[in-house]
Image (cartoon, rainbow, N blue to C red):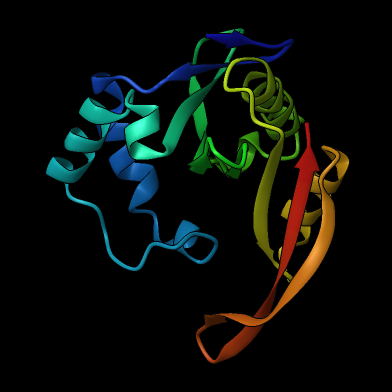
Length: 171
């Protein structure tokens, strides 16, 4: 467990499957993820069962929980973990809108960066953010990520074409 002032990060457990099913299949979240179709219960059970194999999966997901009541409020992921080049992508979701803009995501990013550096010995984290996602841009910039590039016309949402900003943080 990675403990912060207001939140802690813990590995996913089998008991989280129904919560993940709810969050992953919320179509409002799909716009900012790579999801195009719902996940099945079986798919998520398989994922949770094999989630601890970080080097094999090149991915690691944590559940973000509140210290005060242990409520699970979201997830934070390392993906495309590259142990040769010492980098990984980062994705984060604070699932319920009432828990957003309270500093939990920034605290989770700080805990994940420290873990990535100290335990996984990574040197950098990266992410793509849709150019019109102001909340994520503010979050990652406040967390010390630097915009190092733009991927033109990278995402398509309905009939709108959106650039992606590429961010990096050297840890």
